[in-house]
Image (tube, rainbow, N blue to C red; front, side, top):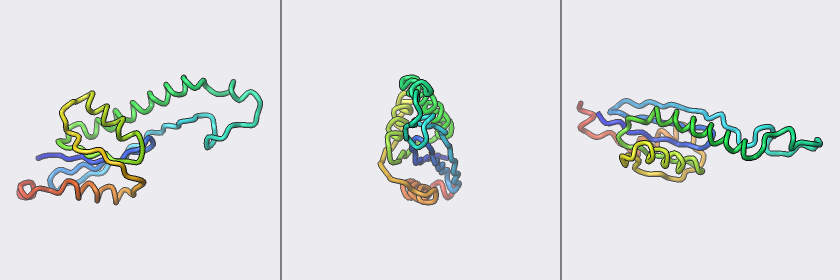
Length: 141
């Protein structure tokens, strides 16, 4: 039986829906990644010597990239065996994940990458069900 996977992703959260025959499973993976650690809502402190209290930008960027790679690894583990994959979301994460999938397993299983804004988990599952309707042959099995 073929498994189809659809996922909505940004740098903070991935909502993955796996469909296999009549069975549907939803998983949510949080990245716990912060772009500017040490700052609150991106606002600079008014205290003196703030630069000495925070990590250097290149160190922060390396840490951010490392955490994103671990986040993508967690997602790939979940969708690894899917025969077809739909990736959508609002920002850069969907393209970054596609590149990782193509690099790790160049099998052409990614059917589409689409841009979508914020969606509820229910809307995400519905979009994936519409994109991957269950074939009659799988319903009978």
